[in-house]
Length: 275
Image (cartoon, rainbow, N blue to C red; front, side, top):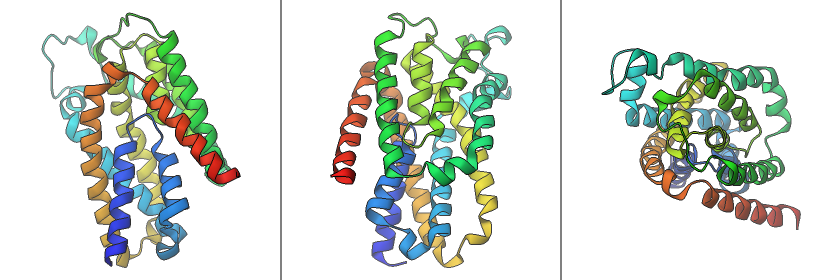
């Protein structure tokens, strides 16, 4: 691996880590940065380049586990927060209910999405529509949210947020953007909605990345392992920074600034692509 390849792996890890959990669409940004600029498929090959993007997602997942290890352990009864009771305990069932709708729809539509929706044009649409949903969440969500912690989320809340999460199957829409918006509309604080989003991300991303990795295992070139390792570490480090910063910031700035960024980015992309 030469310096240019090292730099490309570092940049893609940075993009993945910084955008995976912010409501701006990591998939959209990866398509933009790689397809329009870095073009890793030219030296890795299409199959290996796609596998690389799966591998670095696992770095982002590891960052969530590091940041939220107490809450993850509490899901399986190995950690208890002060004041937490069995009757008010955020548990594995909440997570399963939340991921079920998008999980089922994702399996049913996987081939169609892979074949038809991964393009700059669809990302532009996803960025814009997702931005309007985020603005609507801030505008029409309860002025005084009643669900201020994960332990106050009901199974109904989890399911409704899971339904909204289905929108994120469209590239550019953003999984965190859809789930946080849904959570805010259904009475969660922005911070609680973000916490729920990040917890749900672990099984979703482990499952999706794991299945895809197994399916494409034979396409991994041993000579590309250095590229993979740099991307994985870069994604982990920058996701760690992004998650900690985002969780401290989201209740204060809410979703509109991210929505404005998405609209500006979509406008620039549209000018570049169509003019």
